[in-house]
Amino acid sequence: MKRVFAIIAVLMFGAIFLGVVGGYSERQTRSPLAEYYLTQVPRELGAPNVVTGILITYRGFDTLGEVAVLFMVAASVGVLLASKSGENAQGTNATRFDERQPSELVRTGAEVILPLIFLFGAYVIMNGHLSAGGGFQGGAVVASGTMLLMLASSPTELNHGFLSVTESLAGVLYVSIGILGIVFADGFLDSHILPLGTFGTLLSAGAIPVISALLGIKVGAELSVVIDRFRH
Amino acid sequence: MGLPISQILLVTGFCLILIGLAGILVHRNILRIIIGFSLIDTGIHVVMVATGYVTGGTAPIIDAAMDKADAATNAVDPIPSALVVTAIVIGFSVTAIMLSFAIRLYDARKTLDIGAFTESKW
Image (tube, rainbow over all chains, first blue to last red; front, side):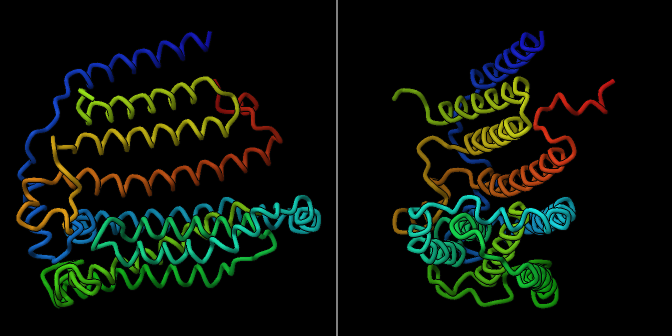
């Protein structure tokens, strides 16, 4: 009986979606807002990557909200899983680590690939304003490197204190750069506090590389802590 | 291919949403239900990016292939892409919280079957 209801619900949604797809005609021109962003971001902000420019400056307040959500999630996961590691610490820790050693393929491969992953993550973060990339994307790459490290060598312990301090510091610096924007430039999180520089080089586009780097550090540290909580 | 790209992407996104929805409604194991939620997230992101496509446009990044003057006439809409970056991170956060809840539920009842949690049923 439940399956019949499930099938009916999926079919009804499918009918709605078919209606949407059938009535959709591909856009031929950009909306005026899109044209404004496409012309203003290279000219005013000096950033070749329009999406990063929108995310960090024109819609910077959304990014601040997202940073707040990430912080809240890291705290919630810490609370939900904290007492669990306290309960099980005595009994199962001894047996857990020699249950199943990761295979030699994983361990050797991780030794080779891990430095490359972290380097690539740093590259994606720093290059966010020039080509595709940015703070969030690079932070996710760094966190996946951490997950590989944890899969490959189980006894490795992440220093939670260091990561939490790093992440909170990055968040505080991000907000203070925003406040510097109020003091020195037009408004909160304005990127004009630093000079624009030459278009297309690494140190250009005002404060956008700095904000990108801070976002990348914060996201990387946060996701690593969240993944590490699941280990115990 | 004669079909326009955005329609192919829209159909793919909507199919992902339907598969995720079917997964949530049919499965009993909590982890499979969480995977269904993750599939719905991915499907919605694909749909959102697909609505920003402009015919014949290219990525909104200015480099050797497209210089400043062409940006306003050759690029696709950059706004849905920016929104989807935020949405991906939020989707990951929700999945992390769901998984922590699954761990606690397993600790309480020693089973991952969703029929074992009947306190909220009327």
